[in-house]
Image (tube, rainbow, N blue to C red; front, side, top):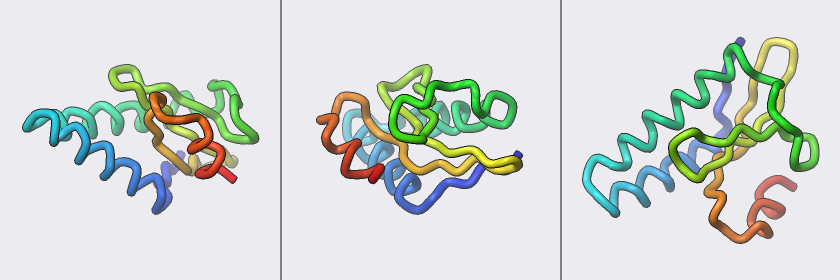
Length: 97
């Protein structure tokens, strides 16, 4: 299974890293380590998550209040967004049109 992180999702990861790193040195790296572990779990668990929004599957992070929105094809998981769940839900609407 190929995991593809699309450009906007990559920017979400950078933004999350910068936010947590500003809170405390090293926390941004801890954030990325945990989110990448969540993404890696999609190699064996892709498709088991709810399709809570439109046609996107949603994986909730185990350690941070973030959700990963992805689509699944036969051999590929495409990560479309990695969003902070504490944000205004209208931002989700805007990102995943």
